[in-house]
Image (cartoon, rainbow, N blue to C red; front, side, top):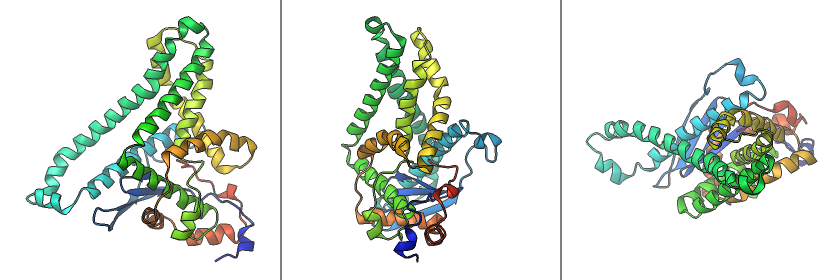
Length: 332
């Protein structure tokens, strides 16, 4: 393993790993490979790994700047829902449930599971659109009579959207299961930060690492909200229902811009990048918590399913190779 003096040649190097917290576990992704590891109710670990090429695999649109962002966003949502559903199924397979469904457990789950997944996804989309698109737009329209300035209305709408988002995070953060989810979210970040800082992937080293990371999905959402303020500052539509339609149609555009900004934040480190990244890192204080060692063990197991961190450290922290030379497309 590299000595400390050699490691100083490259302070931080991008690993290509992204992740997501799931129910009592973590999903880690590296390129097309992903793995999910959870802590079961009996204390043991359950894991699965597979290949996910996303929507339209190999399509040239997925390599075009400002266009690829929407595909990366869709891919992340799709895989994220799949990981959450898998973790929920695994965690709920207790001895009591096994006895309850002993006649034909798989058949009964299959008959209702898919329908439940679809309904949950649709409900999540409707809830997100209602809370973070329609509600701020409607509330901002109430200020039209007072302000009479479309540009100011866009700023008010953006502020309302951020406040609703913060309130939403605070409210769900009071739930025990969500607090544990945030703990696993912190463990995911700590694991990636540990590797990308050139340290061996041990529980001790991971616990010492930061729980905040620039390429987090939280940072992406914050960027979307901030960039939407700038975009809609220049797009003026007086009819309220038309504003709703315009905001939905502009989601791919704003997501594409936000993805490119997030990608730059993962590649470079300067004053401008630190300023751009600071709102997302600040919000991560709500969406991450300090994990315990058992959560970190799950995170490490998930990484090791899809990534040879020892080889990575040898290549990036002994040869002095620059961080920019190892940036992958999938930052989310």
